[in-house]
Structure formats: C-alpha cells, structure tokens
Length: 361
Image (cartoon, rainbow, N blue to C red; front, side, top):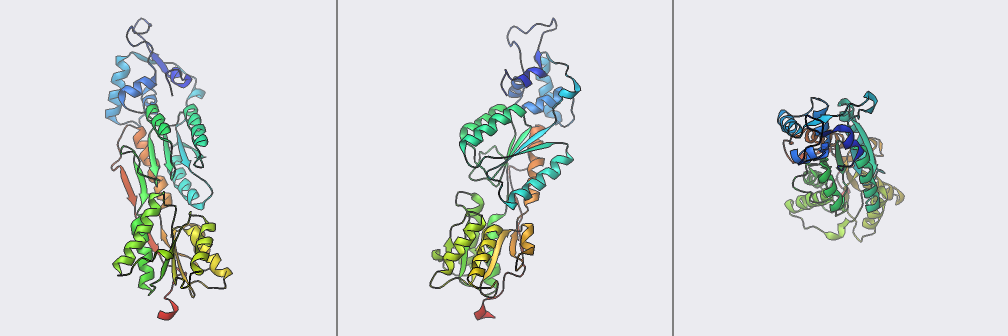
C-alpha cells in the first residue's frame, strides 16, 4: 500500500489543531505511521479503530506516533469497515496434502473471525506478480506461504508493505527474520527406514521428493542415516527421483523393479508416490507386502483405505496450518513468535503394507 493508496487515504491524515497539514510532514497516511513504528499497516489500522488485538507495547508506540503527527481518523460508514483477511499461497493445489493444510488454516482463522484467500502461483513469476497486485488491493493482514518461492523483489515488496509473512515447509533457506513452520522430516525418514530394517529388509529403495525442497532432502538424509547406522552402504541405484505425485511413484517403482536385483522394500517420500508405487506393483502381478513392503509419508486420509492400508509417517499437516495462522496473527499484532523456527513431530503409523521379506519369514 503506497501513500497514494485509496485505502490509506480513507483511514485519515495528519492535521494540526487548526485543521491544516503540518509544515514539515505534510499529510501522513497509516502507511507512513506503520513504517515509522516498524509494524504492519493492518496493525496501525487496528489501533486507529480501537481494536484490542494489539500488544500493549506496540499500541503505545503507534499511539505516540499518531499523537505526534496529529493523526485523525476520517469517519467511515459501517459498511466500509474491512474484515481481517489472510492470504494462503501454495505453489500448486492439486494434492490432498494442500487440502489438509487448508483445513487447519480455516479452522483457526474462522474461530478468530479472519477470512482466508487461497491462491496458487504455480512457480510462475507472472502468477506471483499478479497475486502481489491483488494482495495490495485487498490489504491482507498477513501471508502464509506454503512450499512456494517468491522472487526476492516480491519478498521486498512484502517487507515494504509491512505485511507479516510465515513460511510453511520452506523450499530453501528463508530470510532470518521470516518465521518458518515444518515437520520433523529427518526423523520421519529415519523412522520409516528403521521400521523396514527391523523387519529384516536390507535392500530398501527410496523414491525421493524434489531435491529443491528442504523437506525432501531431510527425508532422504534420514533414510541414509538409518542405513548407515545399520552398517549398510547406501546403494545409489536404489534411489530414484520423484515429485510427490502418484505418477512419479509409479515411474520410480517401475525403474526399481527393472533392476537386476530389485529391492524387497520401498520408502516413498510421500503417500501419493507410495500409492503410485503400489499400482506399479499390482500391474506387475506383485503383492504388497508379500512381494514388496511399502512405506509412505504424510498419512493422508485416503491411505487408511488403500489396498492394503498404508504404513506411513504421519505429518501433522493440519496442525502446521493452525500454527501458521496463530503465528501470522501474532505478527500482525506486533508480537514476536516464541521461536522463529518450529518443527512439529512426526510419527510412524504401522498398517498392513509392511512385513518381513520372504527370506526372513
């Protein structure tokens, strides 16, 4: 929001007791007050409108600046009052994984009386810039960015606008002042592989996620750590790439089955890829877990009803969404989160898709 933004002008301007603009500062919008206070525009708006959801320290700092500049709120009709709003941004929305995140976000946002705008930028700079233009127009109170990457210039625009940002499952290393929320991906990958090792498997394949994602690399590292802790060399021929979608699970499993010595067990770094792998096994006339054990990652609702029900690592997706809303609302109130980096725990859920290899049964 710029100084010429209609929404900023509607909030009011700084005036002297005689009703004229100060000689030094001229008209001061809430955008300028926000910049000087080091808070977001919505935070200043909440102080101006007398809302209680602002920390006492932030309220005092903003009120001091408002008094200093003689700021007066212009009267508005009740219908012009803007409801609180959050932007939830994904790279893509074509996965049940995204639905679980949305479910958690909506639960907390609805309880707080906050609206949610869901967008997908598809990794395209044009889509991201269009989203930024829309964000300016609707003056969101905060942004939750999920497994997406924005160009540095767009991140800078968010900073200039003082819009609070929280990143869920960051693609890379975010700015140090950006709070992040993720899951214990390394320990999840470790637990999945240790489970298969405990059943007696020694040739364990991995269908990895996109290497550009921190969560993918962490799950891969957990797999590697479990094998090394068991005294096994990591056989790179047993590691195939994937993209978290079922098709890559199908393709990856097919490639592993074509090896001279296929693995007896498989860790797929997402449930969707695990389901694709199970379909590849079915088309080869192979059974799960009799011919190959399969472990996934996420614990999406549908894997409880797959054939067979899938052993997987439960990732608290809805809880990640809930915490993201609580964190961005705290930032919007001018408060700091308890920790800038949060990892929620993962849990191995054992079902019917894993069993000892035939040679060990």
